[in-house]
Image 1: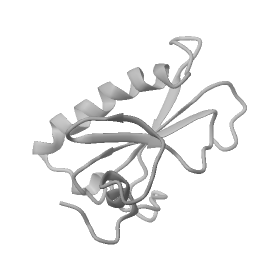
Image 2: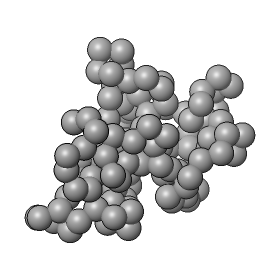
Image 3: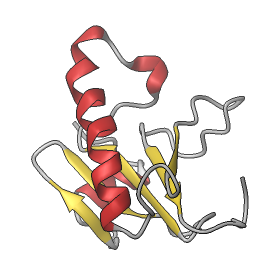
Image 4: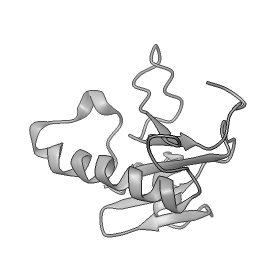
Length: 118
């Protein structure tokens, strides 16, 4: 279910354009509009989940899919292979955790350093 004022729900619905990396029935991945690294994209569930704090045991499969999709997409988007290459996965949760958009999203960042941030 979408939240009417959620920017990521609007991206999922196609109301706001994005540069898509991947899409299936429950997930969407798209490039970050203000990247911190040469490779920086987000993976979001299409279903509105405000943050990791709202995950329940039934969401284990969803999070497992996100975490196993991240390495494949990172390589496809230009991250080097492990162990010399690699990428970072970040999930900000809540105001004190640095979350700016309250729709669960996983940042995947990589590429040659130095990065803009991090």
